[in-house]
Length: 346
Image (cartoon, rainbow, N blue to C red):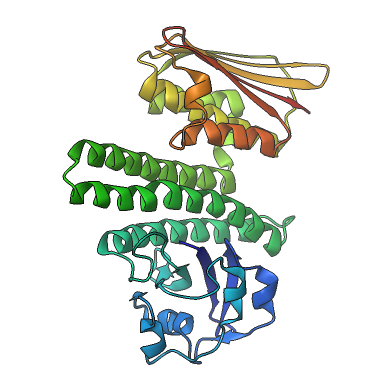
């Protein structure tokens, strides 16, 4: 798809507000007031709760179409709208909180409406985003030092990562699987389904990371090492040796990202290493903090696997290390185990 946009509903003002978009600048929409009681497809979805799946020119024939708000097309590569998928977002109480919009399919069938399979993935994605918004709002209420805009910016960064996964693994994977199925290549279909499965798991992991980030009571209560120990032993059932230099003062933001990196690394140990044993060390010397996680499992060719499009976990750890100004390194080879190391100045 060319664009994924997220809108929130402000019931007190009877308005819809663009929070984030993969293509369209938020400042562009700030110049426009979108009211729930006016015509327009987004407003219609917010009012009715219906899902709209429209192909080429179908949206122009919809009774809610107003003929307005086409200026955003200048930011899309195709400069036009040929397919739309819009759906409502509800919180756990069933209250409408937003609208999710996908615009313009890619590929040979770009001018058709989204497939039923893609629409089902859209519903799952919309539900996940609703959860993330609800957690964000809870966090927003209790965190006085952050402004509303800062919270939305954090959410935007996280959802951008999730959107890339949905597009790169799930949407493309489903299209490829359909094409292979059409020619009877079931082996390739299986590979594409595995890719979709990994993408879905990554989306689930990212939302769990977001929940932990926005509700960091566990880290505050147990501390970094204790939280990693609880996760590795009670959730993953791994046998770990955890060591840390006493009285290291780690800023909260860095501590949270190190916890997420450790979680991803330990998930990889559990899923891929064929061992349950690992060591984890946190060391600090002269203001340089180092997180090192090592297992003696089956290992892999790190140079090859790191660059694969399906290596979400490895790429995610690298991104999180860079996010806090750190350096991510991985050392692994077949039958030699795996070691990841993150270094950062604190």
